[in-house]
Image: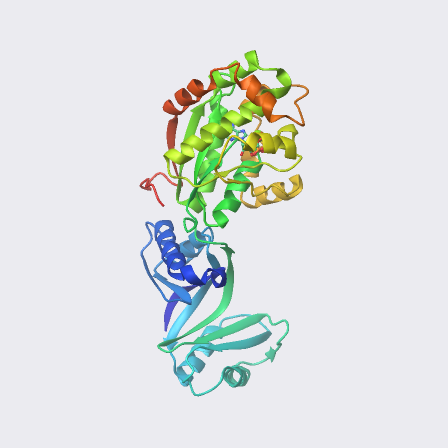
Length: 393
Ligand code: ATP
Ligand code: MG
């Protein structure tokens, strides 16, 4: 009997027309993730199969790939009744359990016994050959799954839950506005779950923001890169824009206009890099710039779709996810962000677009934006140092 990993696809049912695209992207992403481990991958429309000599590491890496519903360590044998019976006994021999259940799925309809009968037969065979066991169909300690296909039968005992979602890249690429806060990494994670591959943009305002703040954002990007293969991080120097706004624009509109500038720059960077949307960590009502009126006035400066995955989450839900994806500890490190340093005491909660336009005439923002984009620094974030950096679709 041959040992192999079987992968159950996630959410394929809703993707009937693009099934090939989904599977090919998943295979590509798995190949990237398994770099450095000996592996062979093959697939059909129902499952993907991986042969490797390092099952443990392989399973470990598969746990951070979107598009996988279940990871199953499985045994491949011929679709032959006696061979199946022998194999099941061999696998159960060293396992510690008292109750079990057998399920059979028969996609090969020429197999002479139907699924229900076959499960019963195998159950009886187990009871006859191993002492002190009983069948529990509702809550078994061990589930024995048998999948009978035309060429081969797969037997497996446990299934590890995958991340679900769509393979990263099937939905195209987007630009994550990545601050050092709690919300934006979570937003990035959720966007990747929908199959969007990320590039990231960070607005730095040195010397008001420190090198440590940038390091923090790089650490967060690296944590997200685990799901994305790698991340191109665009670092924009926002100092001139921010200082000019601070100097020339009424204080209560400072944040609104600063954020309009961020949106404008992000939009230009997105078009330049063929990215199809902006993604950020805004959540309705969280701060003055995230009231619906603020969001409307800020959103006016872009035609790009703006995806806000955590828009309706409350802070505790966001923190919960941040802890799960291991970004929380980094996010709460206390380095000043470019927005926090200039925050006015009373930011406007219901800004008006005509006022924004009027105030923006006071500064030469078009030139400052172009200059900031010209001087962007690109940092290529890799999950580990040995890896080759590649721009992926
Ligand atoms: P976060 O916890 O993600 O920083 P926040 O609650 O601090 O969010 P804001 O500072 O108002 O909220 O920012 C809202 C969103 O705008 C952030 O989630 C992020 O997507 C984007 N953003 C804010 N500051 C920056 C920055 N310096 N660089 C890039 N994006 C930023
Ligand atoms: Mg923030």
